[in-house]
Amino acid sequence: MTDPATPEPTDPKEPAWYRDQMDVMKAENKALKDTMLSMAFSQAGIDTAKGLGKTMRDTYEGDADVAKILAHAKDRFEWAPPPTAPTEPIVDPATAAAHQNMMGGLGRLTGAPLQSALPNDVGDQIAAAEKAGNWTEAMRLKNTVLAQRMLRTAGTP
Image (tube, rainbow, N blue to C red; front, side, top):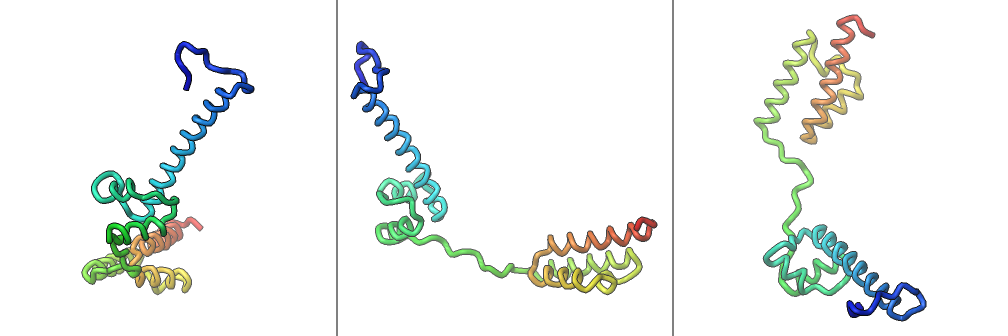
């Protein structure tokens, strides 16, 4: 930057103008790199706001690459990310039984067992969702079928 008494150069042919533009670009580049590093640390599962994560961020001098960040954390700090959740959903047997009882109750509302009157593809979708423990999807499918039955009962095609 220039002295306050010296006027700012506005002519692109002056070297001071190029220096000023270079300073602006360097500041923008640093801000971009900081943002990319923050995102990479976040993706690696490291909280850089305080504690060990902040120290890891302060000592890391590499690229914004998650694998390199994890290697740095392991080599320098003997840190590894926490284990991931199991891929299979954990289904509580009591919750599963309650859902089955509730679905049987819906079948009684329409006068027929719910799954027996379903088209095979929808019944299979419901069974697959229940087996996977995806109760939200199972309920959505069953509610759709129930709504269709109610509309047919009311005389709407």
